[in-house]
Image (tube, rainbow, N blue to C red; front, side):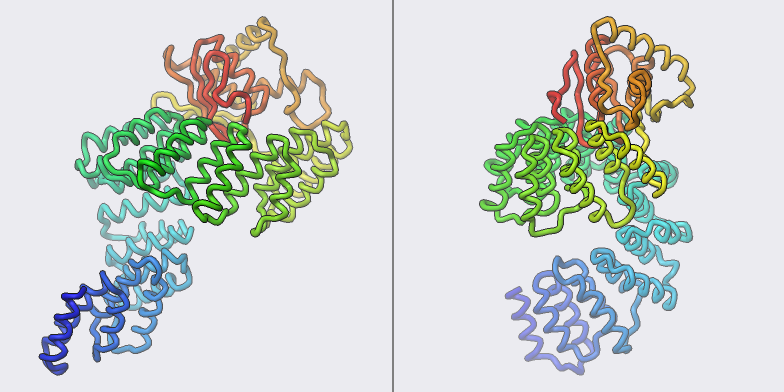
Length: 570
């Protein structure tokens, strides 16, 4: 910049503003300075008497790429329109739309979209790619699809940005379907594969994720295989698919690591209950990695403590975050520490933290407290007060979880009238208990089971095996735990029958029937595993000498030889 300023000073002394090449010279100086000193670029901009579209675009682009001046990109565009001396061109819109996407400025983005039509750039591929990104960033998937479908000409970037939009908004199956379509037209690049890996992580599709990893190693440029972002995605994918060992291998072979690399590994260990490994990697990150932990790092380490019930360690790391690293706690941190304390029986301390939080607790925090009240028999009055807070915190429809937890509190107190009233209230308000659903992947095909499901082609074989399992369980002294059976005052036999048909048991039986000996059974469940299914799965792992990995709503459970990695604390 010092050399550039010397050149600029020389041009001011030796050139005339009327010379035809002076504007070109100023645009070169502006272009360079906009990447290195934005304040200087703005001062230079005010001295250009008749800025052309390149000058406007250069400054808009610089603001759109900056960390703290994205809003100025939109303001500059408005100023450009108001002055009216220069019209926006096809290079203007991608920069403006990028700023709108980052700021979630949907209204301004839609106005820019109208200008795209007005100025005749509706068929420009680069502008359309930016529009897809804008709408995806603002959660408008239908608008993003509409832009993509109407494009007459698409590049690999067009496909990548649309696939990324689907992944970003949780449409993982559609993203993978679109990726398959793209493969017939273009060679996949690092961006494509990163989106595929993230989709596999969302679905828990380990075999497809491993294929994507192999594809990167064998078909992509070596720079892609060593890219930090790609490897971070692989670490995250393997952790979320239940293979933290593979995640560790990828992590340890990375040439470069950033904060996200360490966070992905720490969060991965946390969801698998490997608290010692999470703490070890936290220490390595700080002492050897040369990086400072951020807010997400502490979410991971607090979550690890929570999954093991390490109250003292959780308090220690919460204090380190606040006092040593000066990180302001957010809802996720408060949620971890409140859940940790409440589940360990320190409900009063947890409530004290909630009452002193500088931010309003959300429904998730109140639900964790209600869950703890239910498990620790904290009393009906306190549970009712917490349930009231959940209702006030949830902006729209109250989730079924609150009703289920409160009903268990009433059932434990034998207050069946209140249980019945809750069921009626759920019916009147149209609240339905979320059905249990478990999936298992075999030979690349995903098989999905609901509680009591009879729709699968192998239903007869599955139920026959469940009968065999039930007999073997009875022979070794197993007795069902009906405490978390349906919230009605029905017979013990009825409750036992409902437990036998839980979705994860159907998926495990299907896995026993179809997987080769020695291959782990991997099951993904949308709800928390109940106590009885947890006990049964431990016994099945021992009876059939098979490793069973279950990912429920909260964490992973690794069952082996009659025990679980969670140590019965979840």
